[in-house]
Amino acid sequence: MQPPSVEGIAREMQVDRRAGEIKYRDTVFTAQWGEELKHTGDIRYFGRAYYEGVPVFTHDAVVTTGEFSDPDIVEVTPIKDGSMYWQANKQPEGTLVVLHFIPENFTAFEDLQLIREGERIEFTGREETDSSVESSTGTYVKLLHTNHKYLLVSKVRRISGAN
Image 1 (tube, one colour):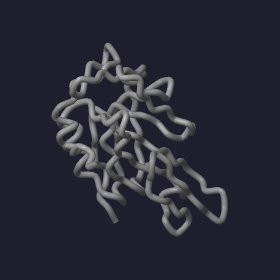
Image 2 (cartoon, rainbow, N blue to C red):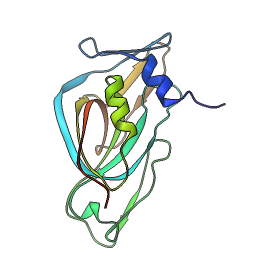
Image 3 (cartoon, rainbow, N blue to C red):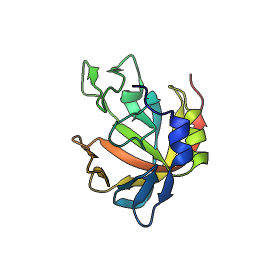
Image 4 (cartoon, helix red, strand yellow):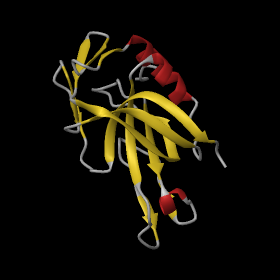
């Protein structure tokens, strides 16, 4: 079965950040959103996210700094089923974080759609504080890695284009 389009999901979602609720169709998803923060880095992977029980996630990204941004030093796999792997001949300097995005509004969704691998991007949003998003139907997703974050993204700013 074909998942719904990301545009259709983004158009139908209603986000109430204060209540920690996202309504999509007949389902309410709840989460604990922290204070606004920024994630800045180079996009090593960017793609469509789809978690069947929690379809409000539209995109995933591997965002890096330092040596993690250099493909000659660190190899990064695409994200599959929410996970990815990296490989290097030495411990790289810098950071690697996997962001799983829920757009707070349709403008943020449209900005996410324009991202390309190799760009440096600044994301503004709120991280989910207990690494879990639950639905009123009983389904949920939970992060198992500390370098993965659920981000309710409100703004996307391009710092530099792809090389």
